[in-house]
Length: 118
Image (cartoon, rainbow, N blue to C red):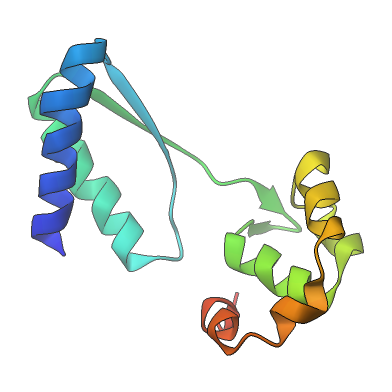
């Protein structure tokens, strides 16, 4: 995993950032995922060596808890759009309301993405 993160960050640094003149990269804070948190940590080290600043934006908070995509997926397959309204932009909410959430609730693969405690 570490080697993949290094490769990906080096591709960004050596092929994308230098061609486009990127001096700052923005990513989101990740309190829930070890992998994403590791990615941010390694990326910060590599980008610093290339004079690219990494800005880690804090996660939005709702009811004293960080908002997570897992939380939104769980509300979606429950059809709980009332609570979801507090967590996502109105355009996202409207899009998700058009989908058949019951169909997604029957997908066993989706349960792997929401079976996390927060």
